[in-house]
Amino acid sequence: MNSKFAKNSILNFLGAATPAIANLFSVPVLVKSLGEANYGLLTLVLALIGYFSLLDINVTQGSTRFIAEYDSLNQTKKTNEVISFGLLIYLVIGLVGMIAIYTTAPLLVVYVFDISVENRQIAQDTLKIAAIAFFFTQLQSYLVSIPQAMQRWDLSATVEAIFGSFAPVISMMVALYTYNIKDVVAARLILSVFNVAILIIIIIKIRPNFSISKTSKSIRSRILMFSAFSYLSTIASVTHAYADRMILGMLLGLSEITLYSIPTSLVNRLFGMTFRLGSIIYPATSELASQGNQEKIKHIYLLASRYLTAINSFLALLIIIYGQDILKLWIGEQFVEKGYPIMVITTLAMLIETLTNLPSLVNNAIAHPKTTGYFTLLRALLGIAALIVGTYKYGIVGTALGHLIASSFLVIIFIVYVHGRIIPATLTELIVKAYLPVITVISITSVIAWFTKPSYPVSIEYLVLHGLIVSAIYCFMGLIIVLTSEHKKLLLNKLTFR
Image (cartoon, rainbow, N blue to C red):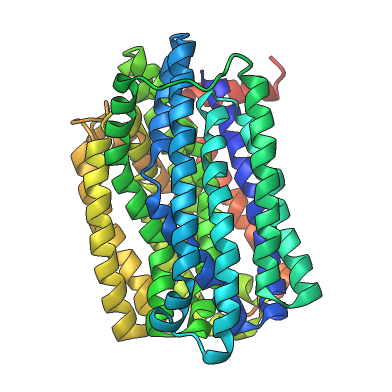
């Protein structure tokens, strides 16, 4: 199980890493080609489309949960019923969202967002194209979950890596050629259509016995009951991903969205990659839960928590220590003064939020989405209030602080509540076996890194050298303190070819 788990984690990580890298390279080109105001408009349009994903009642998670369960029990008929019901739901969601976005585009542009008169027509046209893209992205998000539920991460990761990388590359090419955000969104729409077609072909190949089936009442009830509470998690995740841009669009304008979204997009994409390392725990623990194997779930959970916390902490360290230099090299010196504080605050908020990733997945996998749903709904409500107050009083820095405050408060409550009650590991076990080794390593490395790095700015040669030294120190200490004795033996055997 451990080797399979590690392989799937790496594959899923690569499926996110390739598009993330491509996106990071595309941002400077898009900002330069479209201009700050138009890039802010593009960000706002994409955020608005993302917000309409609140129509998604999270049948994807419920479907994944039950596909994994029925597949492990070789119940093909029930698996086909789950897939068929999910397809129907996402066809309806896609159509409703497409119509809603298309028809409300003029009202949103004129009455909701702070968009200048000369940009309103292009904003309306872009939203209408994006409305059609919404339909295909909803289908795409569901279809890719089917091979994931079957633990065919090799296929899902390959598709995500290819199409996820093409999207920013094509966006760059179109922006450089036409300088028009409408054309950029149209190009992404065409790519989504091809993505859906490829996913359909893959699903037919890996499930040759699949057929559209009428879903029984009992299966519909199980999926909808599970998804109803998981939907509350969708509200929170969508709020986290898009509410800040929406609030900035209403209170501060397009240029401020650009100044805020550039550092936050970097941080979110980097932590999004590490999330993928652990997300494969969901179908794996769903399968174990159907077999009643609580001890195995506990072992996998504590081990994954230990290693993912180490990875996320190291990532946060690199961003905070080298953030100014990263922004200067990536976008330009003009973004450093306002962008770096945003980057630091957002990094701390994301690091704290990563502590709930695995608990939430395991909690849902063992069929307790109700608890996760209530906590994430509270997170959404508190988060929106903190974002509005913070933005109104302190601008984009206040927006980032709103995220940090809301995250810190709710994460502590959630972690304390679920461990020992729902998740088969106590809070003490989590702290001792997962967090304390990482805290030891990150504390020592942070002190060394902070006091040895010279003041900004530094040459790229010194930046790379210092970064390699800090990374070597962290990895060396991690091998000694974080790596478990079992995995130390495995590593030693591989290095000595035993």
